[in-house]
Amino acid sequence: MSHEHNHLQEALDTLKATGVRITPQRHAILEFLIQSMTHPTADDIYKALEGKFPNMSVATVYNNLRVFREVGLVKELTYGDASSRFDFVTTDHYHVICEECGKIVDFHYPGLDEVEQLASHVTGFKVSHHRMEVYGTCPECTSSKEVH
Amino acid sequence: MSHEHNHLQEALDTLKATGVRITPQRHAILEFLIQSMTHPTADDIYKALEGKFPNMSVATVYNNLRVFREVGLVKELTYGDASSRFDFVTTDHYHVICEECGKIVDFHYPGLDEVEQLASHVTGFKVSHHRMEVYGTCPECTSSKEVH
DNA sequence: TATTATATTATAATCTTTACAAATAGTGTA
DNA sequence: TACACTATTTGTAAAGATTATAATATAATA
Ligand SMILES: [Mn+2]
Ligand SMILES: [Mn+2]
Ligand SMILES: [Zn+2]
Ligand SMILES: [Zn+2]
Image 1 (cartoon, rainbow over the protein chains, first blue to last red):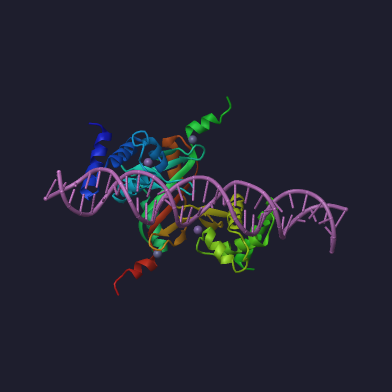
Image 2: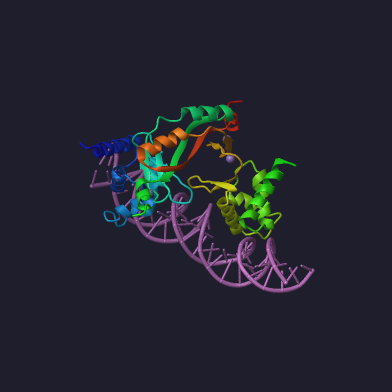
């Protein structure tokens, strides 16, 4: 039994336990998110599934991504002007983003409890979480810019 | 001579040095940004100045905020779906954001060189910078939720 | 299989931001 | 100060992402 299959089954169980109906569209969106390594946009997902679901509405993709986010199955990654990207939740991790090609790569780091504590101490906020991203140039874009 | 006046004069010098013309609209937008503690949106600025400039176009606000960003006078803070917020650049700092009322508060922290280095090491990226925000509930919102 | 609430679809609307072209106004120079 | 040159402003339209709405279809349960 593959990891992907496990993730999908657990996700479907979560939906069932939360009283969220399992539709073919939801099944397909989840399946696509789990196997995807690219942190796709809603439109990426819509386009990827239009072969299998020629009549699916783009609103269905947005609606279901919101449902998945609300039950904790996916995380929404928001950046300024461009569209949101979606990440199936497995383990906690941060992202490194290429400023040339837009690629988003996972990377793991122990967490930043110290920063949260200091922020709480100096501002009086009750801290719930933080976000952090590292920006730069990916190896592919770096080598394609070198002289040949 | 006040800090605000200093900041404004330096900003105007920067514009002059870069060949950017100083217009009444630009002067007013800068002045507003410097005295503002609230990290306003483009529309906040537009509304705040419509008394003084009844004919100013909202496009002028956006255009000038982009100019200011390009010459390094302001930073654009981008969050998911809502509109960008703008911060007059003084010293480097991070932000704590209240999830109840949306307030954005400055806070200083030494920086996260270690995280950047690890990210670079494990992903092969050439790292240029990072962003980080802490989320939580501000003291005002916390106390207004308590029983009386 | 019948029932019923939930989900999907198609489309319109909303919201932020940008594009465009014509009118206006800063800035350096005479 | 007046001129000329070009950047800037203005008004409006357009773009792009996301949400709202209402009619239709369907998943879940008995
Ligand atoms: Mn990820
Ligand atoms: Mn700030
Ligand atoms: Zn790249
Ligand atoms: Zn608050």
